[in-house]
Image 1 (cartoon, one colour):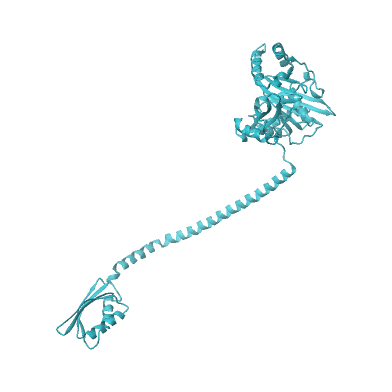
Image 2 (cartoon, rainbow, N blue to C red; image 1 turned 45 degrees about the vertical axis):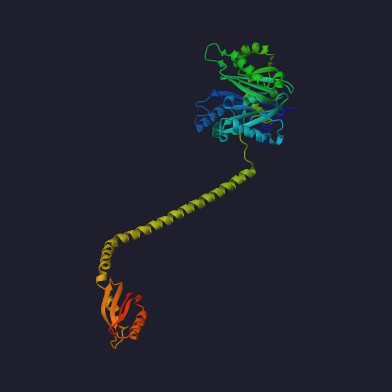
Length: 474
């Protein structure tokens, strides 16, 4: 059993009373108004109008106003629309899915292959994918990607034209036909070439484009039928055997003039490939193909009108009530966080501003007193330089007074020489009448706190006296 998975399958699809199908190709806009009548639909206004600007590079506001005026002049009042994207905007790849891969892991596997094989960054594209099972080739995935900038541009233009976008789908994929057990080929003829879709029972299995297949610049239109058949043979050779064998018929859709041109060139060649031309007069719901200049736009809009999902949907799902509520809460939280950050930044600016003012005031005070400070500093330097020559304490006399206190008053010890070295040390030589008197003097010197590092350099007896030499630091 064939199984298809749409990337946007989780989106809720509802029926609409009416819808507007819109397409942009060849510098023009096509619009088809559809109304639902139970299980059938009726067409309303149908128009095709050339636009003054390119839909992708033009100004969204001006394009939106222009589209709004075109629709109002045509009497279109419908606000909900479905945009049919051209195949030329879409990058399509095909991926085999391993047979042993569980069904629950298929979506993750496809997502991984999308990142590997698409020549774009994942942030730069909107991706939609389906997968199916073929008897000969197993499971395969069809992956379609549209530049996100294209989607955003269309959303801006639709907002400017006051239209609500209910869907944004690959239009030609909605043309996939064929009975449930028969693969069918649908060709869509347009001014830039030919698009081909292979499908069965409304499901898509293969899509490709033949750009430049037709030239309308000459008096007689030229169709490169040989190129189309050659590329078709190459394409069919890559398809699974059961799909290739199941292809029985084909149809050509599009503008009536272009359809006749392609029929004239392709029908004889395709009949040799075993394909039978199916001159189908009606689309689903009873709309005549001959009325449709853009049948893919009508088909995509009809799917949305009746609540059926399009196979390749590129409009991101709208946020639910809970998501909107969380977005508002997040926005408020972000607002308060931004306000708090701004307040902190303002406080920091104020603090640094006050600090700068204080520093500036002190710098001005310093500038005023700096000359006086320099003069005082110069005087202090001179004082430090000449202070040893102007000792108010008369240190040498003070040291001698402390030494004198250690000598006995009866004159039993006398000093012959005193040498003061650099006001840091002193050496003294003398004589004592007795050893007892000398030891008493030595003990008093050691007890004196102003004297340190006392050393006895020489002690000897001679001629009834005791000769000594001592040194200490002062």
